[in-house]
Image (cartoon, rainbow, N blue to C red; front, top):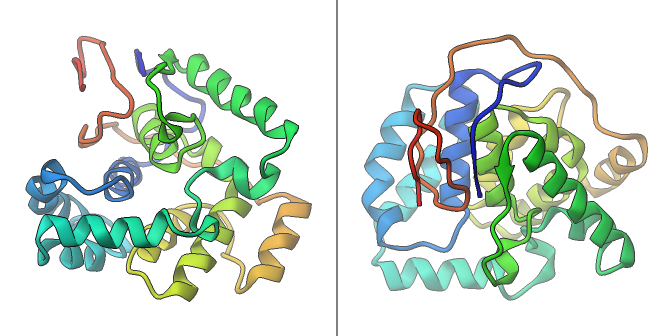
Length: 227
């Protein structure tokens, strides 16, 4: 994606934007760039609030093993079961005709913030891919898409927690930044899906983020080309 950041009506706090950027990086397929950035991620998250510090155990977990082992664990966690699907509309629309319209709404939201979705091939490039949504949320400093898709986030959080994977910490941290308590089980999460997630305005604070993940690119003078 490319574009210029635009001010939203209720920007999320700086440390929340940093959390979203870090969460986006931690949820993509591990590579040498991720390994090289783990010390930076740890330093940035350690200075944040409680939601940010929820990510530290995963950072520590990823610091030890060699890269092939990290890649194997990631594939085992996310590629072998749809119950860990990182595409948000899958949880609400499945593989139905409604999903196409939902994906268009994601693209429209990105364009409203001056971002243009890329046309690169690959399923992970769909606009509802959670690392893309998190990168957008950090770049635009908004949690609007996360709040709108809170039930999907909570269902994914529950599924990852049940599996025992340390990646569950990412969903715990992201959900902890959103208004209202997380549902305790799948039934409560499904009830949230029927009733809609709670909403809340947050105050204005200075913006900045780590700029680690090249899922979105920004060509503004302030951020430069992040590809």
